[in-house]
Image 1 (cartoon, rainbow over the protein chains, first blue to last red):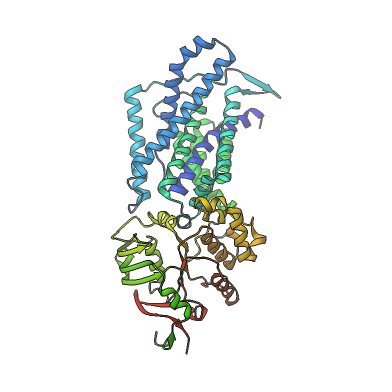
Image 2 (cartoon, rainbow over the protein chains, first blue to last red):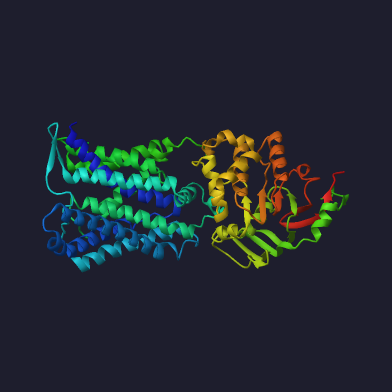
Length: 308
Length: 249
């Protein structure tokens, strides 16, 4: 296996991990399978496209073609995607959590509402922007490094580093902040959290905004490799959901390991000559189903050495 | 409660009669779905009072504690806590008001401990410090908990999911003690523990320097006698007997 393949696998894993961690955290703390995660992804992509499109002439006029100009564009792209993702999270909170969170059968209702939001968003984006793919400015520039004979594109390296930084910040926030402690408490025992004065209504909003921002980050990074389109969120949503399941819903390290496994699996299957890209999806699902048959609690079940 | 025949008021109990009422439960019924567990319960708890709640399994002790904190499926009837009505009719949203009630000053050590298996003992205790004051003083307060339960001191960084039943109970009670509450609800502190450990937990509970009132649900009456100000019996979801200091015949 050459280095280029490893970088490609890590590139896939970074995007998948950003999606899967969001879905996993959301399920175990708020109790919601967020089908609108794909919609958040697509909206963040379009928000970044609109903002960078509007800023391009302004930035070009003030900074010219300098390094500073591309820096400003990169900051605008990432922050607009993060902000749009967080806003989507707040909208999901208002529509799919707040009105129904204390009704019976809440997880199913939330699933249906977020699925409706997802479909509605895709149709809305199609209506307003049309089915055409939109290219975003390349914030990492064009080009590649040659290391030990392997070619590493700037966008691949940037995606891996960017995702690692965002995930590191998220995990540090969960681990060391007070709000993060509350989220972890809620993930592990909802009743105990309630008896510790941790309110689900209050804590759900920052969680939804955080996971939305993670989806926005994934959109910003993936836009460096492929185009933005109304249905761009479907594949990341499916991959994120299945990887979150593979990791054992609710386990953040499990989701990360799952994303790495699937990233490498896809890269390797795609590189085998007689299999190729068309077998990637089936190989992924076969692997996930196999793991869940052997370990029903997913990878997280293996990591978890505490008793219930 | 036929065997609880002789009883007398201790001087401690007489002192408490003059204290204001902290919790007044009036005609409280509660249950889960079609199942009615509590039938028109009345109970008054005065500030600083320590009440033992006895009764067999499945006769409503836990449900009463859950009803006070809005954790049952439905409930009706009046619960006045510190002069504020927190009861009323409710048929869904179990647990929705619980964090608010905890912040009003009801601390709970629930049955089954409701621990966070993946958090360390210290983080666990920090979770209990939900008020501003408790959070600021959390280090001193955690040190205080370690003084009450010395067994927890060497386990500060251990995951609670790996601890034994007795240690978990101590963590759960420790979490309850982190913030100052007016009313402490402790559900079966001796459940599932070896007699020696359950005795130690109970001793620690009675020795607590807390100001608030306390309701301890317990099946083992001998762990309550001589220590509780009052013992209240529950049978088939109804209050049966409300007596002062009880001596077993």
